[in-house]
Structure formats: C-alpha cells, structure tokens
Length: 251
Image (tube, rainbow, N blue to C red; front, side, top):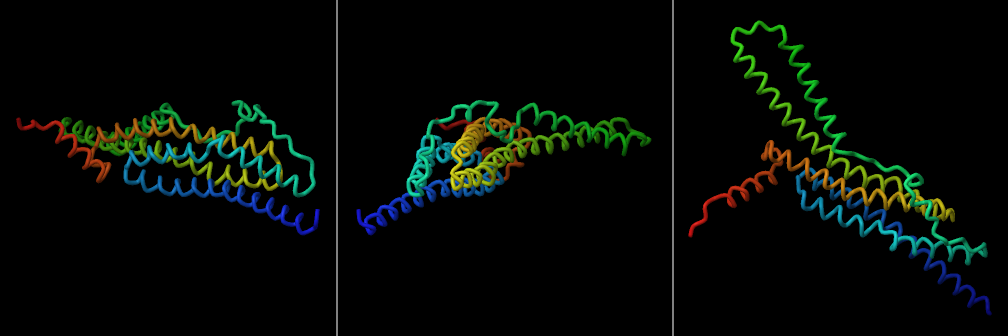
C-alpha cells in the first residue's frame, strides 16, 4: 500500500475521531445550555417548560447514544496509534449503586426539616423581640403574632419550592460542569473504565432529574395554594384560568 493511501486512511480515522469527540463534547454544551434555560424557566415559575427541559435531558445523556461514540473514539485511536485494542466489554460494576459516583440528592423530608426550622427560628425571634412586651390587649398580641407567623410560613413555603427548583439545576449543573468534562478528559487519556464510570454517574444524575421535577412540582403547587400571586405572571394566569373554569357557564 502506498504512503499516500496510508495517509488518506489515517486522515479518515482522524476525521472520524474528531467527529465523534465533537459529538460527545456537544452533548456537554447542550446540557449547559439546558441549565441556562432552566434558570429562566424556574425564575418565571414556568413549570411546564421545566418539565419539558427535564424530559429532554434524558435524550441528551443517553447510554445507548453516548457509549458507542466513546468506544469508537477509543478503538480508532488505538488503531491509529498502533496500540493494543482496548477491552470494550461493558463493566457492569460501574452501574452498581455502590460504584456510581454520588450526585446531589434532596428529599421531601429534607425540605420539610428546613421548613420547620425556619418557622422555629421565626418563633424564637418573636419571643426575643416581643416576649417581654407589656401588651395591654392580648387579642392584639395574638393577632400580630398570627399575622407574622402567616407571613413567615408563606415565605418558608416559597423558599421550600425554590430549593426544590434549585436542586434540579444543581443536578444538571453537576452533569454539565463536573461530569462531562471528566468524561471528555478520560476519553482523551484512553481511560475507558473511568469514562464509563463517569458516564454511568451522568446517567444516574439524569434519571434523578425526573423525581426531582416531581418534588419541585409538588412544592410549587403548595406555594400556589398558599399565595398564587407569589408565582408572578404564572400565578396570575393560573388564577384567571381557575376562576374561568369555576365560573357558571351560560347555557
């Protein structure tokens, strides 16, 4: 085989490696773009858009889509560099719970503990400020305390939903900012075991985004019930829609 033909083969291999790497790197860029979109969607309480964004994450971080490209890069690189062909057997241990890298986690219990702690701190502040106040009218005291507690509870409910939304962003940021650069670095180093381990962690974090959305949805619903207008334009839209649905319809 002539040198020119060999050079063409190497160039084709280089082109294919570059294309596969660009495809993998583009997924990381898309995840980061999704993170930016979510920031706006959550700020606007656009829960329907948030749900769609979370659903699209699974299409990006997909084992069946990414792994073949990873293995193509590793195999072609080995052939080009005249190195031993890597073992492309899928190490299932990378997907076992004890082996998968930990991703951010949040439960309703975590949110409720923070909620109760916020109310307890507010009660303590009330006692510190008003506990020794010589109230002439006990009804006025009770009314003021109930009013301030209601305000505190509404704020704590809003913060609880906000934290649930932030958790979704934290998961996606973890994939885009931490895991995907690690994946690319492992591929460039030819470290398949490490690359597969990182990919497994990214898939696990992406799967966690779905229950994270459900957590957000539940707590955002509670926020809406507590204070519809705290959801801004979305709260106004939902209130108007609810009023229209509840209004008597002309026969």
